[in-house]
Each structure stands twice: as C-alpha cells, then as structure tokens.
Image (cartoon, rainbow, N blue to C red):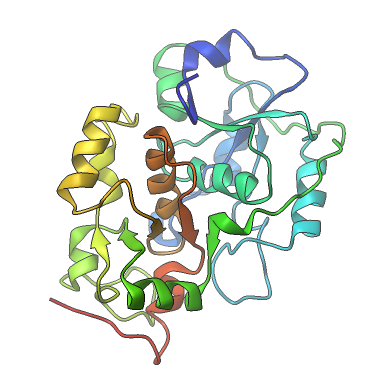
Length: 279
C-alpha cells in the first residue's frame, strides 16, 4: 500500500480474502448520459459491491449526495457486507474521480481502513484482470459508524475559515468555473468562487492513464496553487466529489487531517447570502 492508495497488483493477490471488501463507487455528472448502476451490472471487479453515492446520502438536505446520518450510513454499510474489521478498497470506472468520495465518507464515519484503487477500473481492465457481471448480494456485516467531525465542514465553518484566513480553502473545480468564465453545470448556481479560495483543478493531479500523479508532482501542484502544506486546509468543489479527490491527494502527502466542505459550490453558489468573486 502507498498511503491511502492500493495498486491493482496488491488487490489482485487479495481478492476473495474475507476482510477485503471491494466497492464500486462509480458516479457520473447528471449530464454525462451514463448510468453507473447499469455499468456496474455489466462489468465490475469480482466480488465488488456497488456503493451508490447518491442513494447513500442525506435525502432531506436538498443538496446532492450530502453525508447522511451515521445510523443510516451504518445500515447501508452493513447491507453491503461491511464490518468493523473490513479493509475497504474503493474504485470507479473513470480512474480516480468518484471513488475518493466513498473513501472520505467511510473515514468521516470513523472507518480508517479505507483505500482507493490507483487507476481504478480502467487500469484493472487494461491489465487483463478478471471481471464479473451481475449483482452481488453479500451477507450483512456488523459495521458501526463512529463519526469524525474533524473531517467535515459546513457552510458556517467555511465562512469562518475564509474570514480568519488561518485555514486555506482549496477549490477542485476547473479554472474556468473557478474564475466564472465557464458556467456551472448545475442550474441555478452563480459562477465564480469564494473570496480568498485557492484553485487546484482536480484533473491536473491525474496521469493520462487515470492514476494519481507521484507525491513529488502532487507537492509541486499544491505549492504552485499557493497552498501551504503545513497549514490547515479545507477542500471544496462542485458537490463534494472532487473535493474528496483533493483530500485523497493530500492524504498521499501525509495530510490525513484535511476536511471536506460537504455542500461545496452546490450550496455556496446557490445562496443569496454568500459572497462570490468572478474574475
């Protein structure tokens, strides 16, 4: 293992071990024209269970895939066959895009034995490794949530972070959306960014084959974006998906304490009482 990541080789030698649980956390933007659940049924890593990012969330919030109540999350995890001693390996069909969101969800619920498959399903398939079709119905596990609030930030906490300047807020959205030059993909959201936020587009942290770049390249990218890796950091994005990818990248650099703004721009950009900068 390499920090929060595992390699395809590592996973291939451990498939089928009782405490190794593989999760397919593929998720696509609503306008992508792709169905993650259907694609899981057509092909997935043997033994993997589908983690539905939208379904396993707080449906009362009105915001996309917000972290759910601990009790509800625990029920969903147990139904996926996850127990307190499970070693979770999460992947997605795009390399590393949405898998970090599930990784962060479990860490926010106190399950530290959570890892992301570097390169995801594309790398697994490119190497000719075995695939499976259909749906898995595992025996229920005994997972229990033990929430870690230090890894989650709400709107008021982000307001305070921006106001005091002691905590850096790093936005994973593409540069055009950050500056306001490009429209938001979700209707009703203003364009631009939070005053004082820094921008590090998530795609710059990925290799052409869908793996996370090297630690040295990660460090260079964060420093070039103006991020002080020794200071407190909160990550944000459009809806908390790629903010979790930034948190994963920072964990790769030894910063496992980074929090994610759960509501992200879906919340901030929709409100009339939040400041927005457009350049």
